[in-house]
Length: 165
Ligand SMILES: [Zn+2]
Image 1 (cartoon, rainbow, N blue to C red):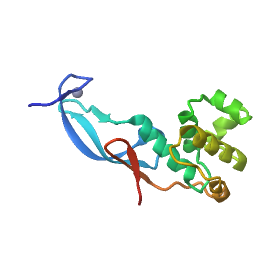
Image 2 (cartoon, helix red, strand yellow):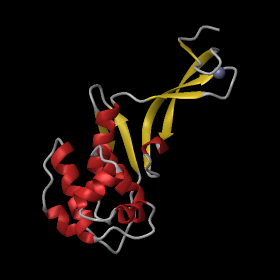
Image 3 (cartoon, protein in one colour):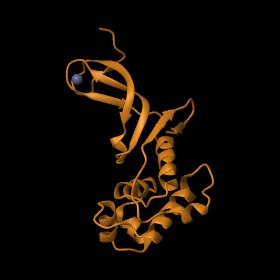
Image 4 (cartoon, rainbow, N blue to C red):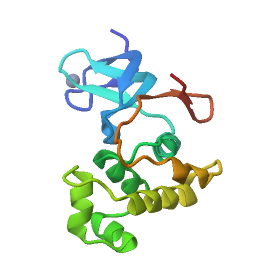
């Protein structure tokens, strides 16, 4: 059998496939990639995914997360914190809260407060976005809801774009 890729576990040939991928590797439960290349080992159960332009992929997801009106969920707080390149301790220092507070936010043991939610979104917007982040967005944040729409991303020739539902 002719294959271009070899399994990193058993060195057997791998079959190339394409398909929708639930992007759990991001740490977010609601993110999908429309059409991702994957390599499946013909002998063992190993599957390897190919994520092109991962930095741009993560940036566009972060952008979508900070634009949603419901307050941030724990997994989103953790995801945004990581896009800032901060440990839990770094993040606690920047936000002016205890490390335990960050941990409670990230595990959904306690909801992130409205001021911390806004500050985190602005920190991400300032450092990472290609488009402007209108401060009007801050008025739309709804602390009474913590939902997240399904996000589906599509690779373009040079970057990634969000598919609108
Ligand atoms: Zn294998």
